[in-house]
Image 1 (cartoon, helix red, strand yellow):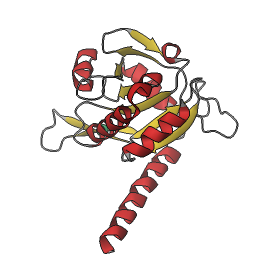
Image 2: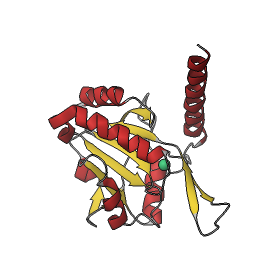
Image 3: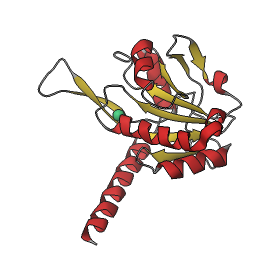
Image 4: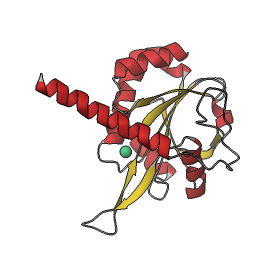
Length: 200
Ligand code: NI
């Protein structure tokens, strides 16, 4: 009983923190790339990034299929690998249908996550997950468009190293690239699989 309550409280807290980040990270109203769609938060929009083969990719390359977008970085100790593992389980559950959605893992760490490093990393997860990197400015534009919270934090023990504190949501976008829903990285794989199936 007590432990269930603790879990519920912890989940509530995490959800609350996530919501706070989303709310606090309101884009500059002067920013041209965020246009409000009636009744829906302005999340998503154009991006120009590079895939793990070094090819330029924009939102146009993914038009016509729903997208699931997840931001993170390959040196992330826990949140990113666990989120990608959940996504892998969900995509495995979907079987053939997994090919009907583009799943994008966009790095928050373009300095360390080169196309090659990212390619090596995403290989550990579902084969349909595509890694995207870019210049720091290109990544910053994508971060802003999706209202991601990401802050570099120096390693206290080793100043040459750093971590990145970040919000971690799966953003489900429809085939027109419009935001539908977001899910915390801790979402149950079955819930994620069902939401993806419903969006197809
Ligand atoms: Ni992470």
